[in-house]
Length: 114
Image (tube, rainbow, N blue to C red; front, side, top):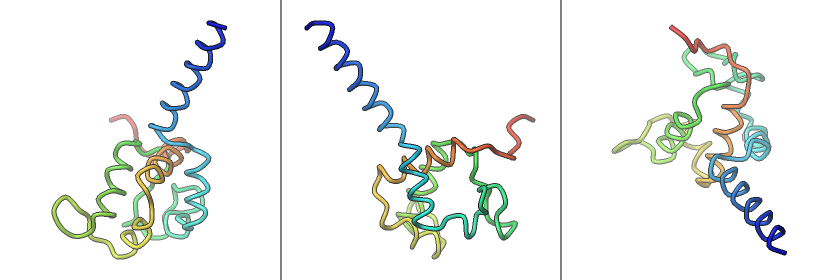
């Protein structure tokens, strides 16, 4: 019984840690629902405009910070882009973590070394 309780406890801890860092599958579903690929490219490495960022493989914490900034909108510590603000407004904090986890998990063409 003690081993079972310990196993259940470890499973709950692992699930909590996974939730805290975001759920990749949930993030994928959200990027499909909001058609993020229509601007950022089907692989999230080929945006339709060179001024749009490549998102695949980007740092998770940066993505979370940027999405929260768009959600705050124009103002203190916010970001001003009407399209992104509209896309991000309905997302919960967990949704943002999930999207960031998914995008971070993708293969990237970003330079990661100098």
